[in-house]
Length: 301
Image (tube, rainbow, N blue to C red; front, top):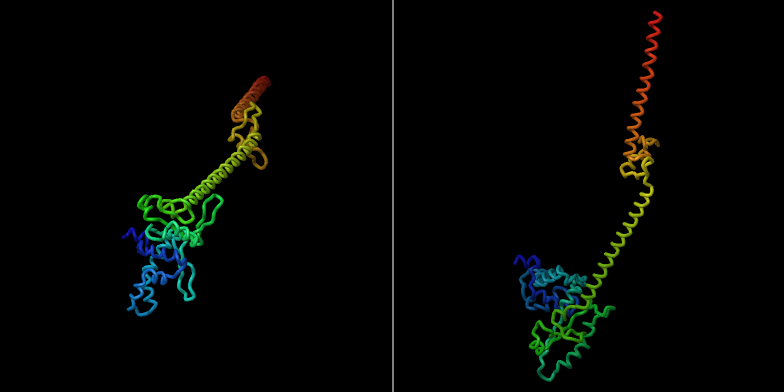
């Protein structure tokens, strides 16, 4: 029961929903009260003990109202406005109309020949079942009622699961589920979805290719601007380039912005060595002067 409640929260049965499908399949639009009076007229004589007519109607239509609620959950029925008296009208959705097929069963006995009756019925009911032909060769049956005929001979020969059913408007027998359904439209819809998927994938691929091309162009332009070491001719690494172009109020922060790391390191070492050598020479020049000054002072004394 819990599983049924989850599937059909209002607790309707298959029979009740089937009643609603059959009534709305023929009438197209009806109130819950009208559906109850057609499907279960005996309920009109129950619930007479309720204190008001409104409560009596609510009680006797509760089952079919619940069936309508469950069908709306499954996308089979929908609200279709209200009557002048304020009662809510219900109608079937496209999915509901497809589910509300009319099945006609003929028995080849007696003077009425189904081979003559069926063609006449096809013409008389054409406005109910005829769909609109599409470019792909399939038909749309929106707002139409599938009418399907079969005979006891066909059922005996092929069984209920075999090709024993003729849907009005088609020229060949089919299994019941195929006759009720629309295989050509389903195939066309599947092809359309696949084409849309492929087009979307191609669009995404084109976007990726464009982005990659733009990224490659920017990378090439950046690479063309990459500095070359003035010492060894090697291109700067990204890190060295970043450090070399850093400035402080327009002045380079780097002591050797034109050199790579290795050449800069050698240049720094060479500069330090030059400084050491210069200091040593200065010291060497100062020592002889001190010695000469010392001799002169001793001679004077």
